[in-house]
Amino acid sequence: MNIYLIALFLFFSCSQISAQIQFEKGYFINNNRDTIHCFIKNLDWKGNPKSFKYRYSDTSKVKTNSIDSVMEFGILDVVKYQRFNVEIDRSSEQINLLSLDKAPIFEKEKLFLKVLIESHANLYYYESGNLRRFFYSTPQEPIKQLIYKSYRTGNNQIAKNTTFKQQLLKSFQCSSINIDDIKLLDYATKPLISLFIKYNNCENTQINNYFQEKKMKFFFEVKTQIRYSKLSIKDELANLVVNFGNKLTASVGFSSEIVLPFNKDRWSIIVEPSFQYFSSVVKNVNDRSYFRPIDIAVNYKSIEIPIGLKHYFHFNKKSKLFLNALYVLDFQLKSKVDFSYYRPDLIVTSGNNFVLGTGFFYNRYSIEARYHFQRQVLSRYMTWNSKYETISVILGYRLKKS
Image: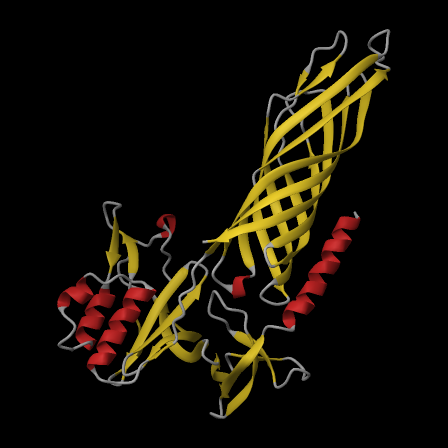
């Protein structure tokens, strides 16, 4: 279908647009310890990268550097990564995958660790999928992982190995840090950063704090849409085909959007409840199982709840293109197919389907085109099939940001 070609074209076009604005002032240090200033493609990494793209100017060729050739890289005033050969425990924290072994299982790996605190005592972070690990170093101690591990006991209870508290208690000998500060410490970014800042202040050393707290953003939009829909039904047993034609209808709804705190606010989760309807009558239908033409009417109303992902391609702070992919949960409201004579009415059932959309957002306004894949609305009947399709144009107005 043409919708696929349009979406594909927009995706690659938007990728090129997006690429023009992602390079920011940065640097890297190569294996010869040379510092090279450049522009680094800021992907706002959720997990720790193994490589990065850079260029020397706006017009120069884009190149790639990997962990094998770079000791350190960063984007000025934003983020810093340093390469280390460390022992890391990759034991799962998922309940169904917990180990019976309390001790960490270390493996030697070469990693880019994200610098959180740089001072007398340094704090680093590593993330890959659901795995999250913290590392630390001091002038007296080389870099090592702060140990935290969930495991199952012999009687199938879940326990925690919190050796990281003993590690920090041993390393952080400071009058302003008491045992309760560490005893109640969580294995999480903000509590650990607070403790490291407190200790480094105790040592009276300069602190570089690279942590930038990223919060999820919440948006709400009022939406109205014009829908161009068509419905056809078929009785396979009687070979009766009814085409209810194309109908132009309007619907209203709203959108709740959660912008995820990584990749430069380019990904979000959306939920968009709305009301939709389709009504049509076909007269004088020749039904072979009966001796006279009949009239057939359909009245289909439902609440749709599309749930899915949206991806933005930014021009600037106010304007951006977007693509989304949604799965629609459909809840019919006393809908039926009505026959004028002997046939019993058919109850329209809820039918879920997929939707693809693309649109443009400016300031607080949006316009979007969507293609709704076929939906089956007579699924409770063995001999009946149906095809319900929609193309819609949606106008939106963003109310507020939480």
